[in-house]
Length: 544
Image (cartoon, rainbow, N blue to C red; front, side, top):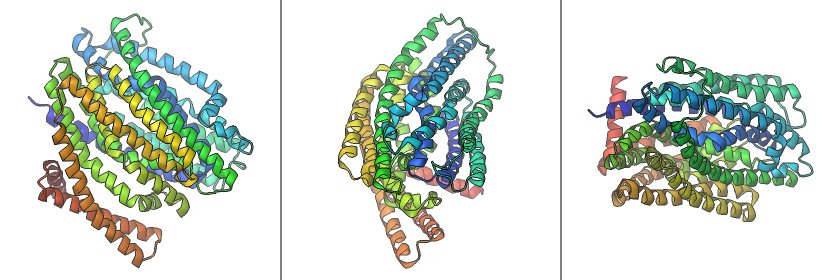
């Protein structure tokens, strides 16, 4: 019997949870803009709050997310105890390692700031450097909490329980939103020079509290998993050794990725420091880049991540049975289904980046939100290959091949790094982070092309012509839908004021027109995936 309904249902549950999570995350970021702005003062918190995620992903996250799900699936299938001993050992050793990483990171926080934001040590930026170190020490416990959350989530995923892991981050965001509201009430006009130690602690510790709540909410999933889990320190286990050998390649993959991100943070924070020295008050550095990235990643997070999370256990089972053709077919179908959403999203970002940023980041000045819009437009060019590459790599992980993705990623990141360095060296300050965004997309485009070719050697050649044709058709249809919608937006903007409420209504009208035209043109050109989407929308509206 086909598992397609369960797969679709799981993806839908995760998409709904991710959507709410991203919306609450957006509210959190809007409040951050209102509290800290988008210039170098905001960079002090955003760099500090990003470092725990960077270190977690660098040192453990990649292996946990990509390697251990197939291993847990196999342990539940093959082990007489249903995988309880293997899972207990894995949970114990990961917790011990992440606790040690957290402690060392807190001790060496000044060194981390010097590595990721070296220009913050320049003369005239001393206050920002000190503030970044303090924020970082409050935020670094998130590393341990993220590890516990992901490990417990993977146990749930392996058991087919996808919902809780997608909804727990909502609680995280709600906690941080409450903290930011309190922060705005007690420090409405704070700057790097006027912020007090108590206010720094409120913002830093409050952000980490959200991760504690997020992890704690998954404890019932573990309790109901049916596995007899307990701390185990007998780590000499052949399956565990195999997991860490596979994880070593994934660690190298992530290390390469984070070298690329290190270059991005370096170039972006150097731009912030240069802007402060030059007297530029508009945010042009890391904060606009990170906020634009958050918007850019929404379609990927809501659609692609949900598909990937449900897909990996599915294709892992097919790979375990050596059903290579079925693995390839699942990947091809998933690529097309994801493109139905990511292609029009990319075109919409390209056409409407500035009004989207103006509306979403209304707590900042028009100049600041316009800068975020420019960066978002730069990101838009890489949305489709970004999602496609991450999805395709799961094909290698399903076969427990973690070596090939490393080699592919090396080429992808090398190109992106080269383009980032060129952007920082030759572009005006206003355009540096736009160049960084474009560099990411071009690197992922190269990576997608290599991944398709390499993975085809493992599962059988992909139907390249069919995949290219479907993506080009979707792009053509999205452009046909987006062009008149943009023209309508431009006409309305010229006739009426640019007040925020008008921008919101105008964007809603233009977005609705683009969405409707996308469905209509999809029907006219007989694109099955768009027709399927239209039918689902009509059915949902009919129920309501």
